[in-house]
Image (tube, rainbow, N blue to C red; front, side, top):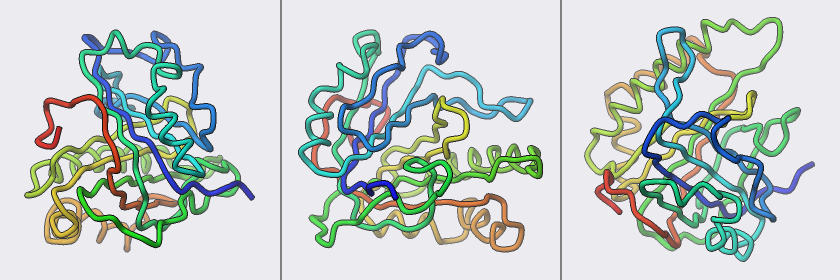
Length: 237
């Protein structure tokens, strides 16, 4: 059984032009990372597949704070293309609540990926969610495409919610890894109100209860312990 993470780093960066995976050096990863997922944030195109984008995101998982902090402060070693980015933002995260299943630690046996901290220092709320499908001959690709399109609709709606300071959907460039959403909130109350009051996000949750629109998902609430860089489109940074 794989080790479970207790800390994470999150990264956002924007290039002057659209960047496809083959145009970037993606061979590196933080030395002590239990998981490292990186990919673009493109919207779903007419064919149902995500388009390339000028904005990329990444998340690393770590067993201890020292490893996560070391990665945060040595990010240029595994993100060698950062000098060509227009801007970037990087954060050290402490998960304080986690539930669900994700395949980022074990492709064959998706499960918990974080051990939540028993102590919550408070502060800005950053939420990581993942969702995935069981790939095989029985998978209906139209079900996957429908989910992708509705994720974009819900994410756009969430971005306009009171208290949402930044939000993003991104897909790891490695095929088969569960996709991510990342959002930053003024406080927990704002996040909970947006997630569960009537609206696009609540509608998708209710729809999943009856239609099973994905095969697994996870939800993680984090505190931002430290951040570097800037993201000018966000109210936070």
